[in-house]
Image (cartoon, rainbow, N blue to C red; front, side, top):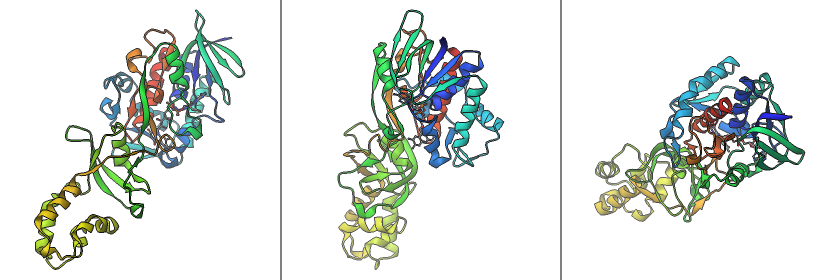
Length: 387
Ligand code: FDA
């Protein structure tokens, strides 16, 4: 039999594409090498799946073409996904502005997607190794360890490289490349940063910060936590996606405050106090580290020059990561299949009719907060309806 659509990857994007293709009457087969569908969904959002962000838009994504995601996101929106979630009576809540999570468990989202696929008569074969895909004139032959499968269209949806222990692989990138598509260099993103001078005694200290890559760069105000090897937390994960190797980020440890003004006021108000009391606004373990250079001299005798240097460090702590925690800890992969070779309406390869690429395998990387799943749903629907 020749399937109308063969979807490679039973993850977020692949299941959504399969259900959409099946709903319009296509015969659909989903292939995956893992033991069960949607394994990344199951571990997402701390087990509660941050399944969308109500305020998503192309500006919440990193891509060589910053407009590429616009069309798919506009045609299948966060509200459309919420409608589906509501239809399945899955209770959800808005955790912080725009970020929607299940009240119960991420399993509900996977079960919902499986139900959608079953209702659309999609077939699925798990634990199937995909060896290669080639074109045969009329369509495609997908070679697997269980034999060849014929397809009129193939949707590449095997995701990115993060979390190899959950079966992440570069399959979609390799197949895309074999069909002449370009690949934007890949790197771990939404990933903790490693600092050569990390102080393990600070591990676990957390605070609110603003992380930037400079005046014109993106700006994320959110939590940061010190780790044994560097820094993590939402603000750091967000900025990590923008950091090329060797580049630095600036961290404002006192967001919204004029650090110098604050230090000078404290000096004046409490002249006999010792340096750590300058930083009552920060966690005490961190405050102690930051004022080491001021010694045990009371505030009245601290030269303003030293306070100015401390204020600079507080409002513009420059970090130059020696690396990241890599794909083992990264939430997503940056880069991937170059969007210049794909239609932004349908995700079909411009020069290879019938070949589609969706989800994280494509060079569209979302911010933290549900944007990556929304891209998986939107690109999945776009390809599923067109294939
Ligand atoms: P996805 O990775 O979901 O699916 C790919 C599928 O392809 C998998 O089933 C895999 O087994 C299969 N596959 C891979 N290689 C194969 C091969 N060689 N042969 C056959 N099959 C193969 N995003 C978000 O918006 N909100 C959130 O809360 C979170 N939370 C989160 C937590 C953690 C710990 C991680 C690692 C990631 C997140 N994400 C997230 C990101 C989100 O999980 C991710 O962007 C989407 O799952 C991407 O969907 P895809 O369908 O593209 O890939």
